[in-house]
Length: 506
Image (cartoon, rainbow, N blue to C red; front, side, top):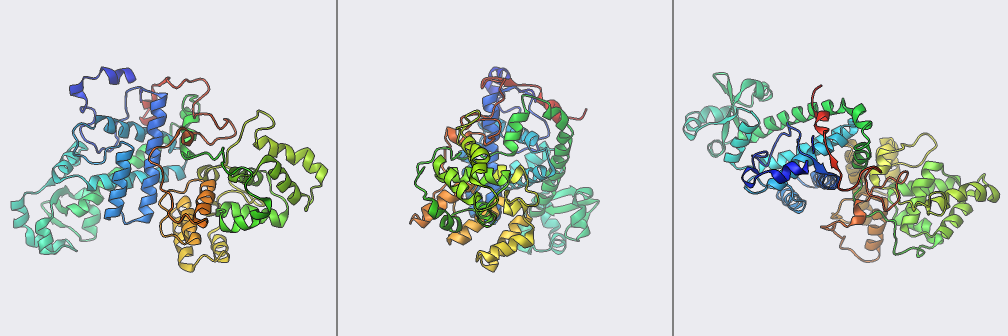
């Protein structure tokens, strides 16, 4: 990708649509212009937000249903992505769609799990957009991506009506006459042919529009899967690129909500209430850590970091934190002197009172899921991601989650929708049908739980416009809470160039 804002400004108004003749594409050609670092980050974060919404809607609603379509269109509009293929002057939206896809392709090619997630969300987004095309725009798109599927004429359809009716299960004669059919090469319709679900004549399959979607989606999946594998081969080069690696690591582990570094309720949580709060308002990951701490009177470093910063985020002061951890540790094998000389330092460090004076922020769900997996004897991590399914099932049952709810949660875990599994756990334990927002942070879980339990039954929707605090990187090891996800040697008006090489064959 050679990212030059100069090229964009020099483009004549009459040529604005030329690079993007359609609002839908297979993303076969990487962008060749330069963009600023600010635009790079903005485009990528917006697309990541969009794909998170796609994931959330996909498991909450029927993908072909009106509610799903309405909510997804609203999100596309809000984030200024192409939402219908009818607008003629949506060059900026099409450009953003194109560039942001390739940025996230770089970020999400770095592991099999990331590639699988990215592929699934992009597939669902493409399916929605393709379904929204009119008949004429659908044909133009097929021609544009070199899929030679030609819609047959009404005369030919009427002539073949009986054969189409007999060969296409699920369609009545009335539906046959209402549906558009496409003339498709047999090699593209081999699955339909094997299942005896399509009419064949003169080496061509006559495919109804409901099945042409599946063929186009299959082509898109093959192309994108191959492209991700190709980009993954460039990983050594990407990882050695000082401009890119910090940005891409941030995106692939990204959390784009509040960082919970400043709490209005600091000092308002009493230590004697933590046991009760852990049952009522802690997410499963923190409830697990609290239980392990009470039982073992100790947590390893990963657990202390994850749980300690969470407690800081819900309002524990430094003095309360020192008292809380000391009281628990001295019940075990750590005496008061050893605690004061060792463990107390790391607690003060987390509060920005030691070392580099970095005021660390609580871990987001993505950070917990994607980094530092627990080993034997550890209790940190995400139970939905890192627990054995049978042990997770037993834990949910012990917490009085109803059998149907346990089944729903385990299905989400099986599909690797770990945050959505936690969201379902929230709904089941708080007796709400739809929390109305994407759950992305343990401290968000706590805050929303407390609001509901205090009488605020209407769950707050996600804000339409995210403030600056919501775009902070959550990588505490390298940056403080006021950092932006940029490299130290680049300014915000710097330009990124020459990235297209990562998407092409050598």
